[in-house]
Image (cartoon, rainbow, N blue to C red; front, side, top):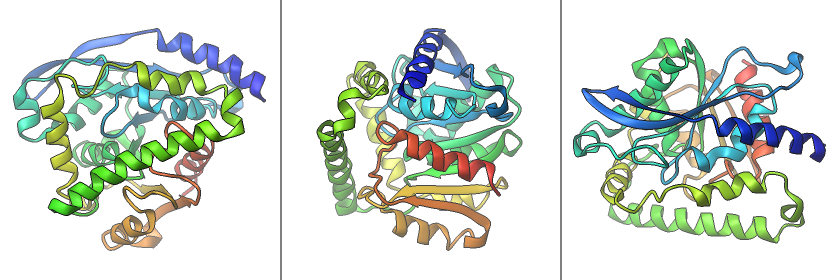
Length: 297
């Protein structure tokens, strides 16, 4: 099995080198954006007809979601990745981009990427802040969204002053804990995906020269506006989280979401061992759950 993964990994890394970096236009602004489209030479019986638009959360471009992207690609999905403006190798947007309607602009960029690849319909899978952005994209452009999957979503509840402090603390602490647990596990010594995990550390800093945009994004996720977005999403919705998520606790979030979307109308799953960021670690089990939630109605 590991040899198969290594073979696919070589192909995946080669396709990552095929760069798409173009100016995309949103609300009259032109922003150089870095994006990718990747599919692997898996068995034809495994190929899925609908691609996945995969968007990571706060603090990372597409490099921060590569292990999950690879695990999904191995299951036959075409994966569309994008580093939003101000992340990774994408250019920093003008202040007007993030001073007003920031998540609307981010959602517009995601839709523009689908248009560049001539994708009529895709599964929208967003992690944390990415879930809230893709909920906005699904609300604004329903014809492009086959299903919206909220992966450890942000923005479920409004955070006050002390809530914001707790959010930052839990975000940092969860990341440290996740990395330590991975490094201490025997599997990490011979993990074929380690090369993809290391990609995250190679991306251009999301902080240097970009701090004002990060602050604006943090203010947005603290406003708790996800529910008003999902109420207007006409596509099917799925929810996936982890039992050990201390940033956005799974059962709390799911209970609140079910106040807006009846439980019988939402596909959901909670992976007991997952912390907040399963896009870098434990990606195979997360990909298995995503596949199940997307395919089965």
